[in-house]
Image (cartoon, rainbow, N blue to C red; front, side, top):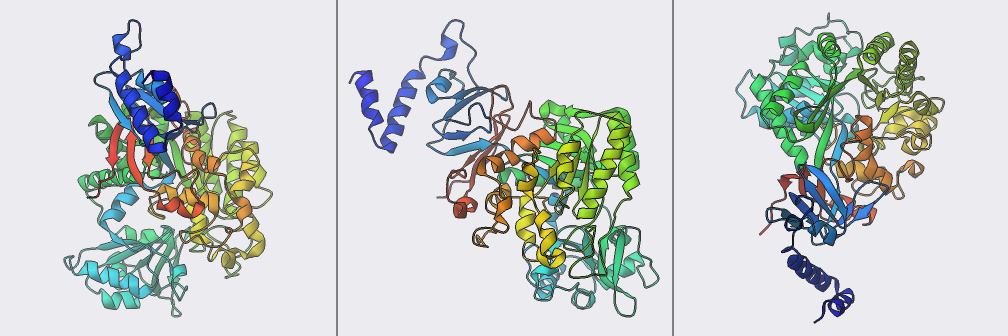
Length: 577
């Protein structure tokens, strides 16, 4: 059959037949490669074709194929154009109609925390104190007596009794192991009697600044430590060895790849973790884009400010050019600093983990040293204080492109929403926090303050971007949970109908950018990462279905087929027999 009628016929064929005919044409053309033609560009290392590729690039939002050479994108467009760049050694991936999106980046997470959670007791999803105790008892059976048992993930708001737990039941069930169980948000911990004994925590122990020891009616520690009070017991826990931390980081990276993450903003890396990132990079073992925020440690900050930023070290794998500070605690533990008292506990209005003067001082020094500052703030008072501190620092050291961030920005007073755009401050938020907190947020805040809660749309309409994340291990690693939350304002069961405060939803295009391009902008990486555009690094994810078009209720059914970093396969879903 002549080629023209052949192609005309194929246009009327069924979809499977069209795919087969296209493959035949491409196979025929593969014999005439770019390398064989005089003056043609060198062939690609990788060609990805026959798919629906969302680029997050406004110039060409959706294409069918792309080509990669030396880890960067050299072509986006149609399959024939990509095939023209195919040589004898080019790897060709036929997507068979599958969906591709840019590599997803979690804009706020805790890598070492994830690594630790993979080896500690997982308490996420527990629905009662009894279930928490049962999981600890199970671990105690395989742990030598006297050794610490560490866990994380409990949330009393998910229990029938939402009051703080007391240590007595835990101490009776696990008397021979000191136990330290972090709340899901990391802003409170539950400990047993042996742990308090090891740490010499008694009735005489005073509450530290920015922390609270929950006490019983007699004034004795009841077992729950809020925010900075966790350090009273945490300091007694033996630190993991350097090799254990390194192994946990590698485990965390593998887990991130499994969920389609090609990058992560590590919100508060210690000096040891920063050194291990560098070591992994020198070993060629760092295969995720790490934007590491320096933890609030004076010696580490001073060392990096004197050294200067690291931008894209180890072949574009490691950035160290920001500092992570803390202003307040978390809403679930009533540590978020509010302008007015909590609606469900008028005796409390939250905690200031750091003095506002400290944030202003570090921000001023960071501006002089060329570093970004990213500060945790959840309550409306916490956010206002951080904005005030940033504004004062910027008056002292004006800088046009500082990209200071507020991490979480969960509860905002209406007067402060426009200040983000006016000051050039980026609200780095986690959509999955909204769907985790919506069941009880009204109890904490009352109806009026909810108008400024998880207010993505209100912020977007001022002209700012909203990079998205999970805050893992506070939430699950899967970034599509945040994608689903952003567009639906519903939980995994698609509750409530129509979404919780649905006027604050993102569009799907915005949600995609919030997990790809906007994290890149928030990390000064937009020339390298965030979209599938010419010259950028070839980080992408192959999905089992089209998250941009399937019904919202089906988004969380999506599976990651493969994850690619710099054009290299770092994860592939196992094929079921």
